[in-house]
Amino acid sequence: MTLSLTPEDRLFARVGEERLRRVLWAFYARATADDLLGPVFARIGPFPRGGWPLHIARLEGFWRAVTGGPSAYRGHPGPAHTGLGIGPAHFGRWLALWEQTLGEELPAAEAAALLGLASRMHPNLERHALATPPEAVRVH
Ligand code: HEM
Image (cartoon, helix red, strand yellow):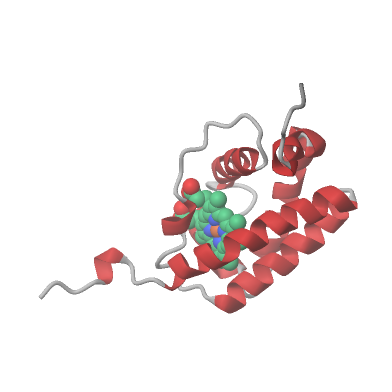
């Protein structure tokens, strides 16, 4: 019998949970120090303290889920990006830093796969980012 696993199913095992965690801490160290992205992440607290351990744990759950690993993540990434005041420039920078971090932390195939996943999520997340927050919608 042949197991028909997609590349994403095997991705979590290939990356490994320790390396995934290292990627996330390295990425957010970079993102929080970035002139464009940093101020947006201030809401989570001073990196690496404040709400960061919890936030990274949440993001780890998300990346475990999308790479086919065991995960208890049940969040809604789209709406989390509404009302932050971010747009295409932020996403462009986010993806550039993601690519840079992946290139430093992972072998080329795994780096490319994780970059591909984020690139595919980009349009949907950006659509949410540009949407009007529900609380700002005027009711006539
Ligand atoms: C393709 C690119 C991106 C991916 C894959 C991504 C992924 C995520 C995920 C999975 C969460 C957690 C959602 C939850 O709480 O369940 C999150 C939250 C967040 N993201 Fe992103 N993100 C991206 C781009 C960005 C950009 C460009 C910014 C701008 C700086 C940003 C800022 C944030 C912030 C501030 C939160 C926390 C929101 C809150 O709970 O207060 N993200 N992101």
